[in-house]
Length: 113
Length: 117
Image (cartoon, rainbow over all chains, first blue to last red):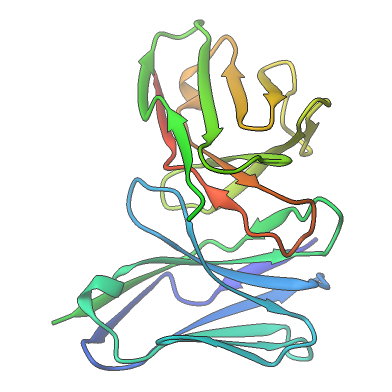
């Protein structure tokens, strides 16, 4: 069966460091991979989308890589700030016409001042 | 940016009653809306996909007679939890997408916390 794993349930880092989150998947051939941020008691907020033929995508302090051979995506936040503390979710889409998303379980990131 | 609202944000009901949750796209027309459920410390699980004017497509294991979805207009979808039981207590989140392409961004609502006593 399809499986998406975000390796760390929780990640704690110091302010100013780079946070790296991992998303691995099996039995899946996604066309797109997306990263979302979710704050407690709120819905997810879209951050970045990367296509299967793209290796890397950047947006301000965020960087996402997508390795379809390793079946893995890495999500980096550089110069992290306490305001970056949240749960980060990766989501895969198989590229069907309705673009259903399958979410990982999330990584809780805490950035300490 | 695109905004999706949900109402109510919290609801507490007695076992056996029905609860309706509304999802609205405020500044765009949503061709497709999705309904998710999220249990504590777990990820979002897709319940159903709804397209305006047609019947919803439910995911495996989701009872369509229990979770009634109506997508009557391009800006409104409703989820009705019928004969709610304590095990239906969860965080229900909708998302809306303007287009039909997989790369079109899904915009999520703030969620509705349902507690069934």
